[in-house]
Each structure stands twice: as structure tokens, then as C-alpha cells.
Image (cartoon, rainbow, N blue to C red; front, side, top):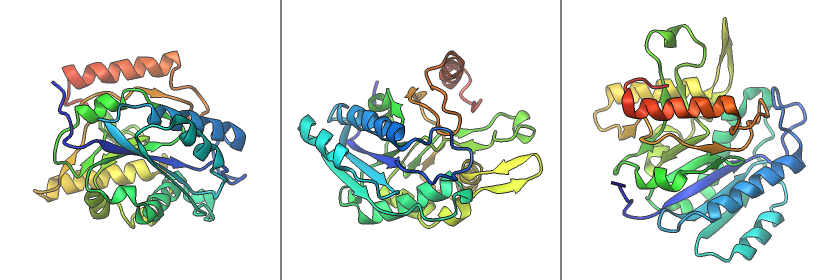
Length: 267
């Protein structure tokens, strides 16, 4: 049976509509294309049931005009509370990486936001993506967590495969207290590092931080695996490939089955 939240949760969309022209590895870089991605996702999150999601907050860090979002929100005229926060927080060296920029944006946005001061959980989504089953993820979420995230770890192979000790940053949930405890002010540590055999990115760093907290703090409040496999629609920024492709859908199905059959295998 679903675990209905005592109160609905919030969605926080992180957005960079106009990325710097020299952003390394970014293939989906056209501001017009990215704007449409964000608008499509914004409209989708506004359509979710109000008993699951009652607030949608857009954070945009390239100081791009947000008028299209205001116009879309006005046309929808739903019951959800909406907050659009745009500012310039993308003026750092792009080689520092996406995690550095996103969590710098989150620090600023959560400080300025009015709607995200409420103690109920928020779901941070990469703003161009649509999590088709987000309402179900909210309803089946455990109660009382500070951080609810999806860690990836496959025994034996994890030490041999780059990127296999991993926290998925496309979707994660936390309370304001959980963000303050584990994530606020950490963006300087989320920059990309080079190492033999591959780079260390924010997903690696946060995986290690979550596992360390779970091991060392009895009251950690961290739930390290989603109960339900997220169903993602949209295009990856680095590879510009659809998350609805046959290959990705096969991985999604495999991970969904694993959560039920072999929950100890964190694929």
C-alpha cells in the first residue's frame, strides 16, 4: 500500500537555460532547445496531483528571462503554488563541472525561496527531465527521512568500474534540515577531479559522503535507495540521447526488477 505523505511534497527544478559556450562535454547546449525542455518539464510537474506535489519551484542560474514560465503558469491556473527564481550563479569556470554549479545554485535558491522553507520534503530534479512516476515515488516514500536518494553500488565490480560508487543526481529528495546538514556549502567539494582511469565527479563524492554518514551517525536520517525505479523522460545533457531509447529502457527495467528481487544489488 502507498505510504501517503502527511503533507504534499515540493518539486525543485534546477535549470541552466543559457550554458556557457565552452561548457565541457555538453552536447545539448542550444538555449532554445533547452528552454523548450524546461517548459515541457515545468508543465508536466504542474500537472501532477496536488495531494502529492503542491509546490513547484524553478531555480535558474544563467539569469535568462523567465517570462515563458510565468505565462505558462498563468495559463494553467491550478492550485499549486509556484516560485520562479532566476539569478546569475553560473559565472564560475565551467571546468569545475555541473555538480559545482548545480549545488551552488541550490544554496542560493533555497536561501531565497519562500516556499522551500516549509519542513516537508522537496524533490530536486534535473529541470529538463520529466520523472513520469514522481507522484508514485512521493506516495511510496518512507516517512521521517532527511535525505532520500539512490545510491549505486555493485559488489566486487564497484572497485573496478569507474562511476560505480554513485549517487544519482538527476533525482533526489531531502528536507530543508537534511539539505542543511549534508549538502549546504558543499559545492566547492563537488568540482570535477582528474585521476588515473577517469574523473571523480559530484556523484562519487556524494556517494562517499552518504555512506560515511550512514556508517558513523546513528541518527543519520538517510534512506539510500528508492523503493521504486524512477521512469525518466527527456534527453541527457552530455550525450543528448533520449532516456526513452531501447537501451536505456532495458536498463530501467533491469533496475526495477532488481529492486524487488535482489534489493541488496544496487544497480
